[in-house]
Image 1 (cartoon, rainbow, N blue to C red):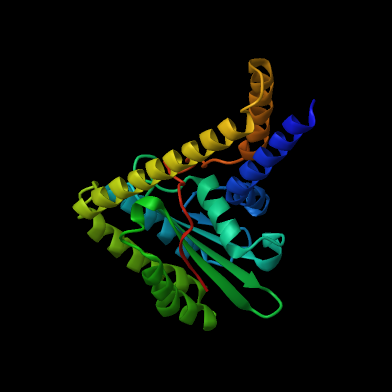
Image 2 (tube, rainbow, N blue to C red):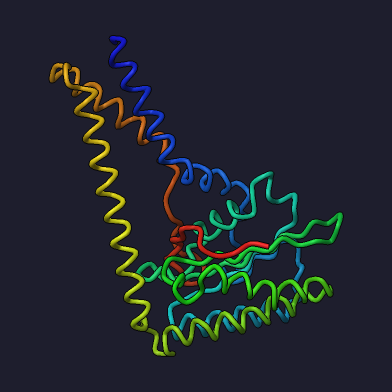
Length: 265
């Protein structure tokens, strides 16, 4: 293989690596996400919550899903469970793996609470699906943590922390869907904006790839172009093969698409 072709492969490899960085980070963080057991609405492997609080969250979650198709999930871990990954990486990986929300609307919410057993301090994250980012923007998610989750956790009232924020989130979502199981006008407008952004981003990426390809293969034969195309395709598959969204499991979910919207504390 000539020096020119090796150089082209190197350039394209760097390009695809940079583009797939967030996907790889989220996929790697899946190692820190426990496999769901029981109801998808509450994953509490260390039993921080009482059985009564867990059952109430499940009951409210099922009722909310029946009326809106949205789902709110809770994942409670300790610091060691993160395996060195950031709070945001694990929250996004869990959100996708658990497939919260409906596939059509991507209207899931994940609350990740992580306890440091040595200091008894908590890290908190609200991860919001694409379909609810209009109803729960980052600033509002942050206020929900500050006003409902943090004060209760600081008092050692774990049940109160999740039940109080769940009530607030459920109210917000019900208002967004008007209690009719369908999206409101603002939801439809936001979904259209999301589709436009995805389409525009894809068009820009395609134009950039075509530009690089034409410049790099200007003096190559058809056979060399074909061999190079195959190699680049294999590189792309290896880089992004682990990416993607989780499917729903255990409680009718099917969503799991999030662009990192939400807030952390």
